[in-house]
Amino acid sequence: MSFAELGLSPKVLAAVEAAGYTTPTPIQAQAIPHVLQRRDVLGIAQTGTGKTAAFTLPMLTLLEKGRARARMPRTLILEPTRELAAQVQENFDRYGSNSGLSVALLIGGVSFGDQDAKITRGVDVLIATPGRLLDHVERGKLLLTGVELLVIDEADRMLDMGFIPDIERICKLVPFTRQTLFFTATMPAEIKRITDQFLHNPVQVEVARPATAAATITQALVHTRSAPHDKRQTLRRLIRSAENLKNAIVFCNRKSEVAILHKSLVKHGFGAVALHGDMDQRSRMAALDSFRNGEMPLLVASDVAARGLDIPDVSHVFNFDVPIHADDYVHRIGRTGRAGRSGWAFTLVSAADGKHVSAIETLTGNKIPFTNDPPPVEGDDEEEASDRPRRGRRDRSGKKGEGERSHGGRTRDAKPAHDTKSTHEAKPARNAKPVRDAEESPRATRNAADSPKPADQRRPAQRRRHDEDDGPVVIGLGDHVPSFLLTPIRRKSNG
Picture (tube, rainbow, N blue to C red):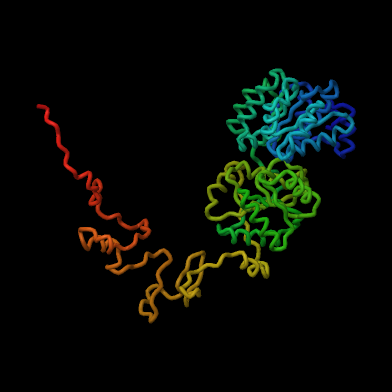
């Protein structure tokens, strides 16, 4: 099947041909005819299957008739992240070069004034993130009563980011008679509830079983210790020993870990950029551009880069952290192996990650094999020494004790534990409580006399340890009753 058989307009077909595409993907071949028939569509497809063009191309054909009005967009596309919204705008610019349609982008990190100016002139296509869209609506700068077609993209990602209440509110602001296109990679129960509520007799298009990875991706698990410096060392060895590595995305669970790992990789001579949600929009786009252009081979990112980013030639994906949600694993590794290319996905797994790995294997229905750790790279241990915090117990002079060694963060004595006849005094364990003489023990002091000592003989108060006894229970005010409370009270007789 070719694009000419799908019913697209000549202008759109010319733009597609100029872009170098001749054959539609399965999701495009099934969804485009239904969109052109003004049917509601529920599209379920894994990432990297061409979902964006599946609604972009028919929208361009439908919008050739009619014109935009001030502050009233004709179509609305909702995206969970700024990067996805900007990517959809790039698709409209590429395929709509012959259509002359106006497109506006409403995302965070950009001034309201520039966005208001575009809306005021009137737009055919409005691409927005839910939060910024509602900000414009509440400011009275935007009306959604003229929306003819609503697209909700990456709906399961919207659910993960907590946007479902905003989506419900937006769906109530657009006309009831609009056409709705709903695209998602997975179908959790909450997404099913939303589709039942806001889609009218939709055509369901499913080109792959939800939560499956592309067959062109080679997946593997790599053993590592849970300590952060050990994981960073394992990752560096893995990157250096990886075959056919052209570029790679390294995923972390937390934004703070992205910054730390990026700094470590740069310190050890790797070309890397970072991408996470706390960065401003200009920095995020600069990082993506440098990675797309091949200036930087490594992109260290949070899950903000796990959905829909159009970087077709990523050779490797490394999961520095096992994703907490199994669905995120599918989207992360979907950044590689796109458009029929071969890809490799490696996940660093420690002893504490067993339940998350089991959830991933249950979701995907495949057992992910472990691979042997890559061979140590010469000089890597010396490089790691600067990152690794110094361990081991020190004596008062600041030097390590004789025969003492550091192992896994705990200090151990090199001599056997049963050797008690040493001429040197044995050193206490790290968590051992200090032994006090009887006269220095607070408990012994309290038991030495039943009555408190005079004020001039009392020792200064010290911070009490959590494991010390509080002493006998004090009833009322104890021995510190003010004298005025001891004054007898005369009771008046009733007679």
